[in-house]
Length: 474
Image (tube, rainbow, N blue to C red; front, side, top):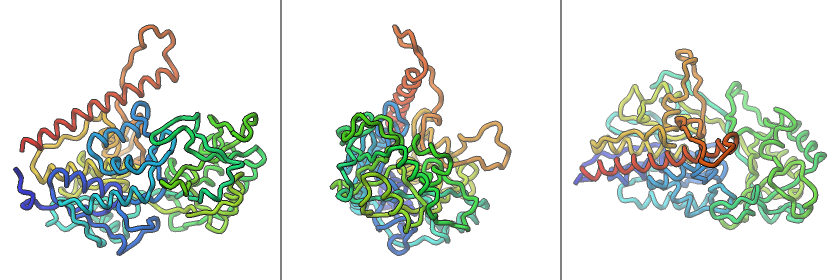
C-alpha cells in the first residue's frame, strides 16, 4: 500500500468550485493536497466572503433531471464520482422546481468544513502571484474567471497567447417580506415538482402589456455601467444582462426569462399575464429570493427604481443589487492536452471556468477530472479519460478541441465558453417503439435525450469502476 507521507503533494491554486472539487478528489485518492486560496488576503470584484466554493452569481445548479437534461446527467455522473460539490448541494438544497438550487451560505460552509477537516488537505491562505515553481511537481490552476492580474500575466507569458474574455453579470437578491403577495403568487412553471420542491417553488410577478412596455423602456433608457477598457469583449449568451436582451428586441424578454407560459395567476385566473418575472428562493430560511435571469449592468442608483416598476415589487428591499464583472479564459483547445495539462509544461493543469467551460457544475466537473488526472500521475496508476459518450467526456472534448470543425482556419480562435448540452455528445441512433405510428418532433427528440442520458450514465459507471479497480490493485 502506498505510504501517503512519502508522496509529493498536489498544489491547487484557487478554492472555488473547480479547486475545491479537485482537492477533494485527489485527497480521496490518497494524495496529499495543498489548496492555495487568496481570499481574504486579496478579494475579487465578485466574492463577498472567504468561504470555499462561494456562489457569486445564481444559487442554482440548474436542472437536476438526469433523464432528459444534459446538466442533470452531469449532476448524476458527479454523484457517481463522489463529488463534494454535488454532495453538499444535495444536502443544502432549497425548493426550485426541477432545478437543484442551494442555500448559498450553508453550501459554502459545508464544502469549507469538509476540506478543512480532510487529513490530506492543507489550506494555505495566500496569493500565488506567478506560475507554480517546477519543484511543485503536480499543480492545478483553478483560479476561475477572476484570476488575479499577476498570475494572469504569468499565464499569458507562458502560453504566448492572449486571454479571451467575456462579460458575466450578477442578478439582484431581495427580501421576501418586501414582496407584495397580494399581487404575486407561488408556482413552478407547469406546476413541475423538482428536488426538495412541491410545484410552487417560484414567486411570480405578472405584467400586462402596458406595464411590460414601460419596463422595457426603462431598461433601455436606464444608465448603465460602462467599462471602456473592456470594449470589444463579448458577452456570454447564457448570462446576458437583462438590458442587453431588451435592446435586442422588445419581445426578447417576453420569450426568454419573462415568458408567461405554464403559469396561472391565482389572483386573476381568467386573465393571462403578458409577461412574468420569476423569483427563486436563495436561502434555506426562504427570506431571500433572486431575480431569475435578471443579471444586469445598470448602475446601482437606477436599479431599485427600475425593478420597483415590476408589479408586486413596488416596495422591494434588496439584499444585493446586480453587477457586472469581466471573466477571462484561456484558449484551451490550443493550449491543453486531453488531461487538461498545459502542452508546454507537463505537470501543470488547468480546471474550471478558466478553461472555457461555463457554469458551476461544469467548472466543478473539470476540477474533478483534473484532480483525478493529477493524483493518478502522482500514484503512477493509469487513468483513462472519460468516454466521449459521458457528460464528463463530452465537456472535456469541447474544451480540448471538440468544438473545432473542418471549416476552422489554422490559428483562428473560434473557441467560446460552453455549458454542457446534448449537442456535445456523440449522436445516438434510436428506433421507433413498437406500436407507435407517429415518431418525430418532440417525441423523437425526447427519446433521443433519454437514450443519450442512459448511455452516458452506464458508460460513466463502467469508467469509474475501471479506474477504482486500477487504484485498488496498487
